[in-house]
Image (cartoon, rainbow, N blue to C red):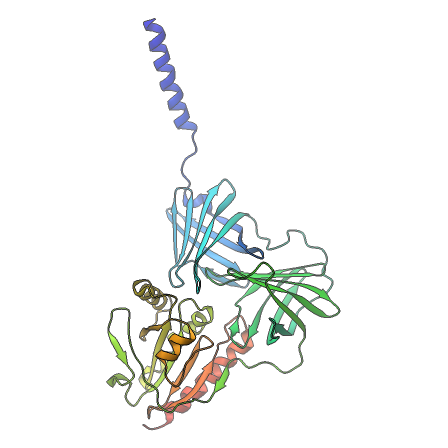
Length: 409
């Protein structure tokens, strides 16, 4: 009896030791390394994008792929079987749990209606929509004239197609939808983008030289927003809309993230050319403008240029919104002040900007001369995905600032 009990105890210990030896170890950064095809579950369908993960020892980096754009995650961490990509400048993150060669998790983002969560799944691979495409019925490369939404808002699309693979961008007067990538399979066009926050899916049927389909977003309907396109004439749409100011004098006084009040009447702005950009951390085109505006402001400061960003952020959580502005400034190395001016609503912007608001498009940029007068208003911004329009927007911006800098106070 005693021998049997001792043998049973020894056997139990041996089984426990064996189980410990053969049980799966926690994942390491190297286990996530490689290229993944990840999809987000939008109300209107699955939005695919590429994810490239690299690991060197305990260090791991990750890049979102929307060819030709590569968007590095701002923060990356691996905790056991969980990979977390952070985008604090957007207040967003992507959390993925690994089980073998399968990923499952969620994307968390901020929208005007509040926090949004989308289910995410992934497998190893480099294809976008269709692993093996049907021969395309047409080559869509070139410029297209767009009609978007129930009101038929005018826009422009530029596509580059090679075989069944297609990339491009779509521009509306309010801005562009960043880098789009996808496939043409038979008579179906499929495009998508996800940069950590901006998430859109475009589908269309090709027929008779036209495109007809729908665009889907994280908070949109299952049926999406209708759009059509046809080959564009030679004329190109404006990169930004230039408006004359409704008022000659413009003032503001808002706090930065540390609570320090900044006013246009402060001595630092006296006799200077001042560019005031109206935006928010939630706004993809504002991020594109900041990439340009940060280095530009530094390069022209000695000549008399000052830049200020007035941010209109979702909700009234001041602590969260200040953290968003700080992350935004760090991401683009902005040396100019970012001030919390309100929420991105007509009522809030009209109250914050008498004579200028309400703001309808973000970013909107105000140009103030050395004499303190509001000279011009630029509405919208064309990002780098719209290469020609982006170059034109930069030229027009520089031409106006150069002109104002040459004037005497």
